[in-house]
Amino acid sequence: MTRRVTSRLVADAAGVAEAARILAGGGLVAIPTETVYGLAADATNARAVAGIYAAKSRPAFNPLIAHLPGAAAAMEHGLFDDVARRLAQAFWPGPLTLVVPVAAGSPICDLARAGLATVGLRVPAHPVARALLTAVGLPLAAPSANRSGHVSPTSADHVLSDLDGMIDAVLDAGPCEVGVESTIVACLHEGPRILRPGGIPREAIAACLGDGAVLAAMSEADAEDRDDPPLAPGMLASHYAPNARLRLDAAAPQAGEAWLGFGPDPVAAMETTARFNLSPSGDLLEAAANLFSGLRTLDRTGVDRIAVAAIPADGLGEAIRDRLARAAAPR
Ligand code: TXA
Ligand code: MG
Figure 1 (cartoon, rainbow, N blue to C red):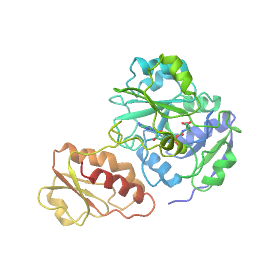
Figure 2 (cartoon, rainbow, N blue to C red):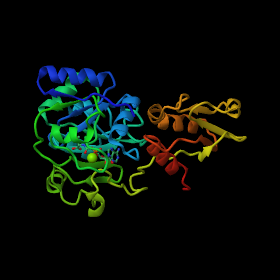
Figure 3 (cartoon, rainbow, N blue to C red):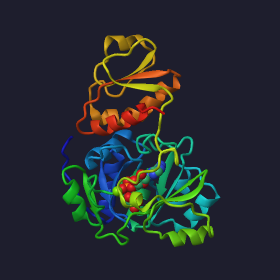
Figure 4 (cartoon, rainbow, N blue to C red):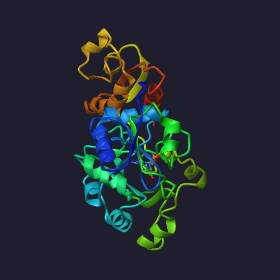
C-alpha cells in the first residue's frame, strides 16, 4: 500500500479547514471525538473508504459508523422508528451510535456499510468533530483510528504510533474525554438491542425507553472484542449475501455464469453480458471500492451463478477474499 506523509494539524480554525480540504479530496484524517480518535474518510467515496480498511490492515470489511453534524443530517441517511427518534433526541450529540435501515438514496457507499441494508449513524459531541463535520458537509465514515487488533486511541500520539505513514493527517485536539467507544444500539424491526456497550450506560438507554424495552445484548465475550463485535448471523441479517451462487478463483466463466473480474478479463468473459470488473488494472484498493456494487450489479441481472476471478491474498485482498468466501458459503 502507498505510504503517506502524515501531518499533525492543530485543531484550530485553520487546522479544521485543512482537515476538511483533505477529506473532501478523498484523503484520510484521524479526528478527535469525545470517545476515541476516529480514522475518517468521505463515506460517500468508496475508494476513500477502501483506504480506511487498508490503513487499519483490517482483514475483513466491518461496517463503519457514519458521523454527521446533527440529528437532522443523520436522519437523511436512515429510517428512524419511534424508538430511534427517542434515543437520538435524548443522547445526540453524544457517544451513541444508532444502527437503522439505510434510507433509499443515501449516498453513503456500500463499502462503508459492508454491503448491509443498515447503517450505523453517530452525531459526536466533540466541538472539533462537529466543526469539522459542518465544514466538510459530507458524512464521514470513521472507525477507531487504531491498527486492527490494537486498542482504540485516545490521543494523537496513540494514533501516530499505530498509523504514522498510513494516513494523511491527524487533527490533534488533545486527549478524549470519554475514552471508551460509543454505545451501539440497533433499532431494527425486532426492537432495540445494544450491540456494544460504550459511553452511554445501558441504564440510561433503558431509562429513556422504559423498562423491558431493550432486548438482551450480545454475550459479554462477544462484546469484549471491541474491534470486531461478531453480530450473530441471522439475528441482524448482518452479512450481505447475493442470491446468485459464487464460484471463486475461477479462470474464466462457464456457460450460464456471470463474471466478476479482476485484472484483464479472459476471452470467455467477453461473451457474457453479465460481467463486472472490480479493477481491470488489478488494483486492490479499487477492487475493494467496487466489491459490493459489483456483486449487486451482477445479482440484479438475475443470474444463478457468478464466477469470480482469483484475487491475490495480500493487502486488501485478504478482506476481499474473506467477504467473497462468506458470500459463497452455502445457505
Ligand atoms: O465511539 C465510537 O463509536 C468510535 C468513534 C470514532 O466514533 N468509532 C468506533 O468505530 O468505535 P469502530 O469501527 O471501531 O466500531 C464500530 C462498530 C463496528 O464493529 C461495527 O461492527 C459496528 O460498529 N457497526 C457499524 N455499522 C453497523 C451496522 N450497520 N450493523 C451492525 N454493526 C455496525
Ligand atoms: Mg474499533
